[in-house]
Image 1 (tube, rainbow, N blue to C red):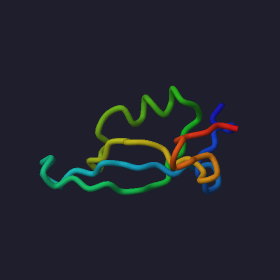
Image 2: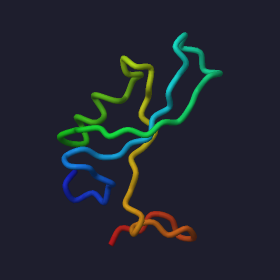
Image 3: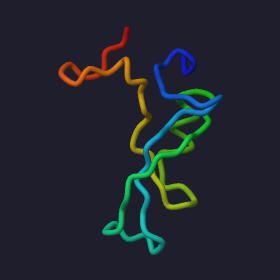
Image 4: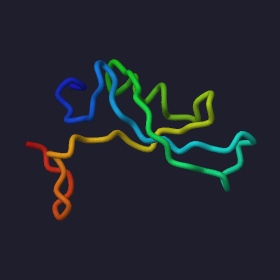
Length: 78
């Protein structure tokens, strides 16, 4: 199922957006960062990223390929 998802990819990794907290864990210094992640399936993704990671990031979402998104209709799976 992961192979069929219309996600932005680089090799066997997909592009994800993370919320990154300050070094002290404070929520008033949060920034959104991009990064590539590797996962086997959706359960694996949930297990790995449902909590804050060792580098103080939490998964916000995965980036979908542009051709699957319409600015008026939203995500359109073909």
